[in-house]
Image 1 (cartoon, rainbow, N blue to C red):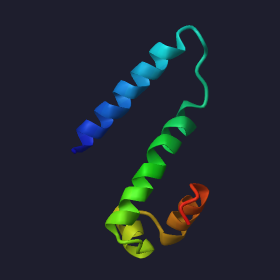
Image 2: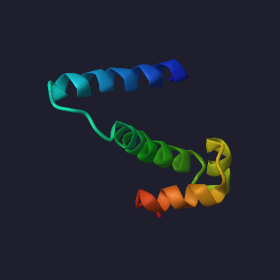
Image 3: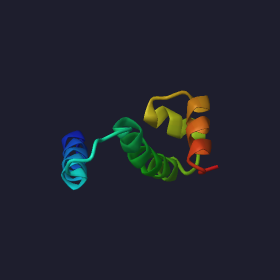
Image 4: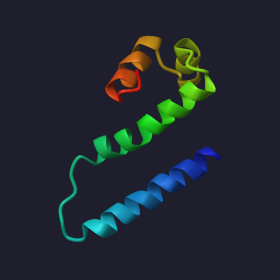
Length: 77
């Protein structure tokens, strides 16, 4: 899947979210999207890195300590 496909998937899902909201006000969209995308991304990267946090952090382009914090936030460690 290319970057464009991921962006298209997010856009389509946000369009559906706004359609489903109707006239209700939207709130906390940023947190909603980040939480929805971040956990499965972390799970897949950790699987791909065979649970090696240093390798996973390199793949993600983040610091290993940041990765650990995110894994803890999502209950993945």
